[in-house]
Image 1 (tube, rainbow, N blue to C red):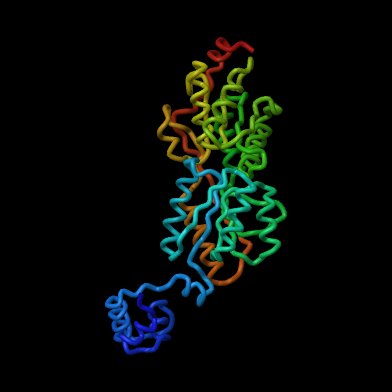
Image 2 (tube, helix red, strand yellow):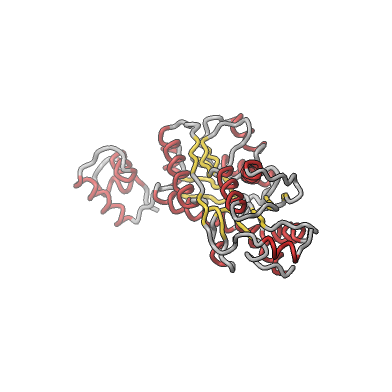
Length: 345
C-alpha cells in the first residue's frame, strides 16, 4: 500500500505539499497539483481517514439519532439530512432508538467514542436525561436538536411551530362546524405531542368549545396507535365528528378504525393529520394535513451543524419553520342533521 511519502517522492515534492494538495489547504500552483494528482493515480494512493482525522481532529462524520426509522416522516427526514451532509463532505451514522432511553444512551456513548464531529438529535423526550448528561460533560460539543426542545438545556434547535400547526388544524375543523373534536397524540413526553395539544386546546378555547379530555388520547406516533385510539373514540356514545391526529401515521390508523366501524370519511367523520408525509396522498380520500417542511428543516440542520463545527462554537440558536394547512378530501363541513340522526346523543 502506497504512503504519502511515496507520493511525495514520485511527484518530487515535499510531504507537506502533498498534504496541502490532497486536503485543499494552502496555496499550490496548478503545475504542482497536477504532479501530485498524477502520482496519486499511478500509485493508487488512498488517504487514510484515520490519519486525516488525527491531523484535523475531525472525522467528517455526523451522528443522526432518530426514534423510529419505520415512521415515514423519519425516512424522509433522514434522506434530506444525508443528501445535504454529502454536499458538505460529511458521512452520516444513523442510530434508531425505538424510543428507548437506554438504547439512546448506548448510541450516544458509541458516537462520542467514535470521535464524530457532531450529532443531530431528532425529537427526544422533553426531559431527555441523556442529552442533559452529555451537555453537562461536554457543553461545547456540536449537538443540534431537530424538531424538539429539552427542558433546562439550551442548544441549537431547528423546529416547526407545532403549536401553530395544532391551532391551524383545529381551527380548520371548527370553521367547518365541528365542535366534538378528538385529539390523538404520540408519547406523553414528546415535545411534538405536547405542543400540538396546546394548539388544539387553545383553538377550542378561542372558539368557546369546552371538551375537557373526553376526546383526548395519547399513545405513539404509529398507525396501530391511531387504529386503537381511533376505534375507542369512535365507539363512544357521543363520538367526535372530527379527529386531529398528531401525525399522518396516526391518521392512517384512524382511517382503518373508521372503515371497520362503517363510518365514512369525510361525510361522517373529518380527519386531519400532521407532517404531509407520503401517506397523505396514498390514502383515500387524500388526507388534509399540516405540512412540515421536512426537506428544508433537514437541510438547514446540516448547514447549522457544519457552521458550528467550522467555527468551533455553539450559537444557541433556535430556527423555527412555519407549518402550512394542506386541505384535501378528508375534511368536510359538518352535516349536523345526518350525524345527530345516526348517532343520537
